[in-house]
Length: 105
Image 1 (cartoon, rainbow, N blue to C red):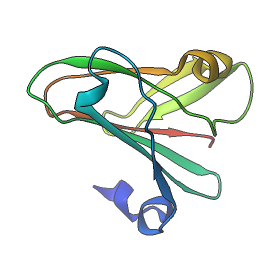
Image 2: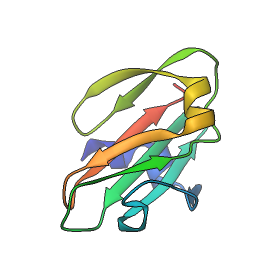
Image 3: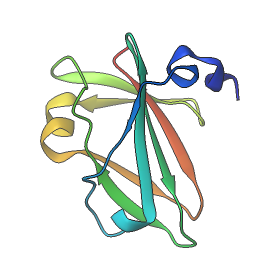
Image 4: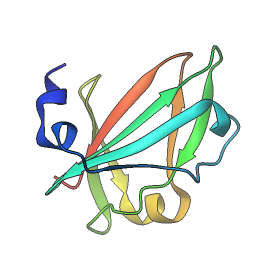
């Protein structure tokens, strides 16, 4: 995928998101990659069942409504940043599915 050539993925700046919540939080793994103003949230469902998790994003900037781009399916969502900060980003995935969200761009 072309996205893995972005500086956020070629550099060493990333961290795991440990405090997810939701019905399948133990089946999901999530981490954030960043470089300058490029921030990506990667969420993977490592199970054979459908599920959802609430994934916190603490370094999301701006206020009010802000675009969050899901890279794999090329879909842009307008999300309320205050809701993400207070209630997390709800991510639902099929078995073995992953999503990559770009924000702060």
